[in-house]
Image (cartoon, helix red, strand yellow):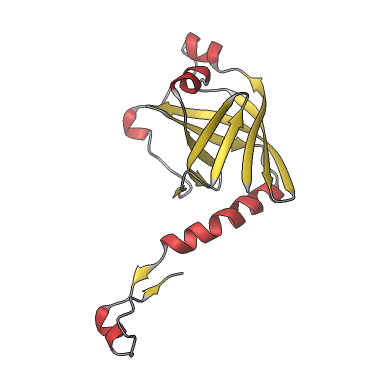
Length: 157
């Protein structure tokens, strides 16, 4: 099981948000993704903070987006930095995560100060997702040339 824990807040973005120093970029620039995002089934990953359990909806090599409750949405502010601990089977990783954006009931986190072990772990975690999303159905004529008894063929990375 993979778990993320927001251990404690290192820096609050509330004062920055209220003073206007931190704000979302213009709408036309908001969806500029550097890393490809992969959707996650809600049963597989979760994030815990105090009494909140945040459901991770998508993940990339450098961050993740969570679906939160109304109470959780009010508690997080753009610019908040947390010490984050990740546990996967016997492995434990730590990094700083920053709240980068908020929209509707979703909050985006970016991992800061990630070491090489964490980066390789995230790539290892995302690899099956990347492989699965690369699958495309093989051309019907090519599939019919082999006796496949009605099977549908896919090819990927």
